[in-house]
Length: 334
Image (cartoon, rainbow, N blue to C red; front, top):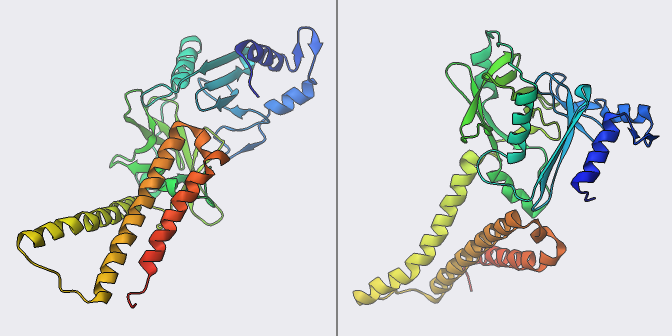
C-alpha cells in the first residue's frame, strides 16, 4: 500500500488519539491500545514487537514505529505516545555513507526536543569474560535458506569483536564517520554504546547457541556454524576462483612457451581428452561463479531482478553450473 505524507499525518493523529480522528471514532480505543502494546520481545529488556508497530525506546520515552522500503523510497514513522507527537520522514534515495539519513534526522530531532543523558554504566566484573564469550560471527535470521540466494549469506555476516578492556564492537553498529562504536557491558550479556544509547543483548537458543539481539526486534542474529563462517568460506571461494583463472590463463601461455622453444606435448588420446575436459570444467565453473556475482549485483541495484521475468537468466546460469559439474565428473577413460 502506497500513501502520501498527508495520509500518514492523518494516520498518526488517529493513533495518537487512540483511534479518534476529526471528531469520529474510526478505531475502537481498546483496539488502538492493543496495537500499541508489546506482544513479543526477543529479550525482556530490549524493544519488542507490537501489532503493526515495533518499539523504539529512546531518550527516556517509549516510542513505537514502523519503517518501510522499496527500491527507491525509504520511509520511517515514529509515535511518541506519552508526548502526543508523530514523526514521519521519507526519502527517494538511500543516500550515501555508513548511516541512514532518516535515522540520523530522527535521532537529531529527539536529541533537540527530548535531551537525554544515558546513565553511567556500573562496572561489571564479568565484562572481559562475557566480551570474549560473545565474540564471533552471526547471521541475520531474516535470510534465504532454501533458494539460490543462500549463497549471499556468506557475505552478510555480522562480526562481534572484543577488546582487552572488556568492550565489544559490532561491525554493523557504526557512528556517522563509519567507525564501529564501542559497547560496554551494563548487565549480564547486555551491552550499550559508550556514552550513547545503542544496545545489544545476547541469549542462548534452544540448542544452546548464542543469539545476538538488537533494539530492532524484527529479526535476531544467530551464531554462525563452522560451515557458514565467512572467515574461511570467503578465502576458499577466492582460492578456487584463483585456481580456475590460472588454469585457463596458463593454457594459452603454456602453448606460447612451447611454441617459442619448439617443444610439443606428447600425450595419449586419453590424456588429451582429460586435459580438454578439465579446462572446460574450469571454464564453465568460472562462468557460473561470475554469472552469480553479476546476478546478485543486479539484484542489489534493482530488486525487480528477483521477479519471475528474470527466471530465464537464472536458468542459463544454472545450466552453465550443471555443465561445469558434468565436465568435472566426466570419466577420464574413453
